[in-house]
Length: 165
Image 1 (cartoon, one colour):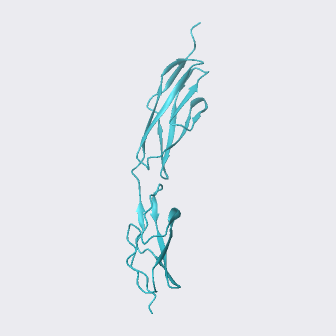
Image 2 (image 1 turned 135 degrees about the horizontal axis):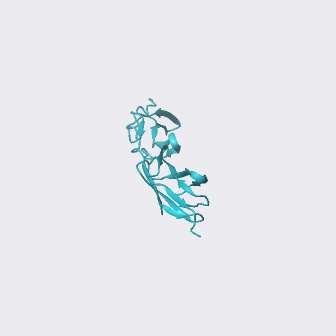
Image 3 (image 1 turned 180 degrees about the vertical axis):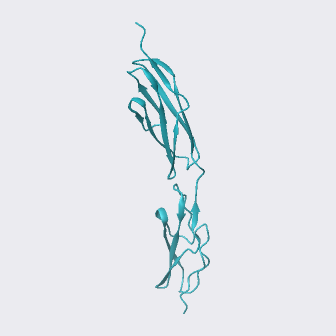
């Protein structure tokens, strides 16, 4: 009896037909980023770009064979584009300005890391900062998605004036 269970894997991570063994076949898939499954083919949605691989163990009648996929799936996302700005851009000491980021590309799920003058910081798509010193304030944001990131300086600044007495 031949214990041949194979074929070659294709880019959707399903393998060609199985033969040999006796009776029905069971399948046990494993692979990159927790790929798993028990059918004759599996599909997986990836949220991180990179090269992905898979293997399947096919069992029948007490015999089993593990086959690694012969071609990997390469996952990539469009580049991240980002912009940011502040509003209002003219305030007096003790007032707040909001910094807002817009992002596209990547995997569509974003994290944000703000930095700027007078310890501007935050992790949302929008942050508010109260300024207690006068001068020109600037900001930048790093947007991360799908394992890639893009850091941009905001398109405008906030000018903080001394309150009129």
